[in-house]
Length: 354
Image (tube, rainbow, N blue to C red; front, side):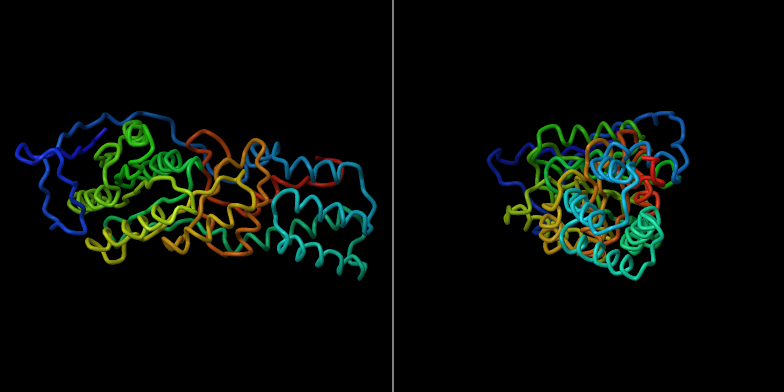
C-alpha cells in the first residue's frame, strides 16, 4: 500500500484551518510517508461474455415475475398485455418506458404480427434490448491525457468504494498503471477501506485521513499521478444525498480544483447507482448530473433480489452510457454492461423454460 498522509509543520498552530488547493500554489508543503506493497498474486478474472449473467440475475424480482408469467403458457390477448404492463411497472421500469413498450406490443398484436405468446415474448426482448443498446458503451480509457481521471460519485451505500476497488483490479489486470485517491473523507473507515483495496491490488493510494478536505486530496493525487506518469487516476468522493445542496456543491469544487492541473479533468464522471433503489435513482442522477456532469453509470447490486428495471428507465430518460454492471461480490463480477446479456438474464428463454 502506498499512502501519503498530510502532516502539519512543527511551527503551524494547531487551530489553523486546513489550506485547500483553491488558494495555494501547486508546490507541496508536506512531508510524505511511503510504504510500497508487494502486489498480491491472484488468478486472472474469468473471461467476460454472456456466461454467468442468467445465474446471477435469475433471482431478481424482474426475472422471477416474468418467469412465472410465461411459464404457464398464457393466451395471446389483452389480459397478457395487462399482466406484462403490471410486471414492468412493478419491476421499476417506470411509466414512460412501460407505456411505450406495451403500446408497441399492443399495436403489433392487433395487426396479428404474433402467432402466439412466445412470439410476443421475443418481440418484448427485442424492444428491451433496443432500449438499452444505445447506452451500452464501455468506458474507453484515452491514452493521451496522463492520467485519465475518473471521478466517482453517488449517494451513501451504493457500493462506490467497492466499485473503485474492482475497477482497480480490472485496470491492473489490463496492464495499466493507476493510482487511487481516497476522497471519501467523511465516512468512518472509508479511507482505510480504499487503502485495503489498493494494498490488495498493488495500487498506490493518496490519502490524508478522515475529515480532510476532499478537493485537497484530489489535487494532491492528480499532482502525484502526473509526476509519476500514471495512466489512470480514480478518485473516490464522499457519499452524499442528492438533496444536500452543500455537499453537492462540493463536487463542483473538486472539479474546479482538478481543472487547475488539467483543464480537461475529470475525463469521466462515473456515477454508481444501487440497482435496488428503484425510481429514486432517476432523481439521484438528475441532481448529480446537474452538479457534476455525469458521463457514465455503474449499476451495482443487480444480483439477489434487485428488481433491475430501473436500468431501462435510466436509459430512456437520460441516455447516459452504462459502463459497468455489478452482478456479484467478486471483482470479476463487475462486468462491462452488455444489453443483450442483461435482457436475456431477466426474461425466460421461451415458454415453459423459466
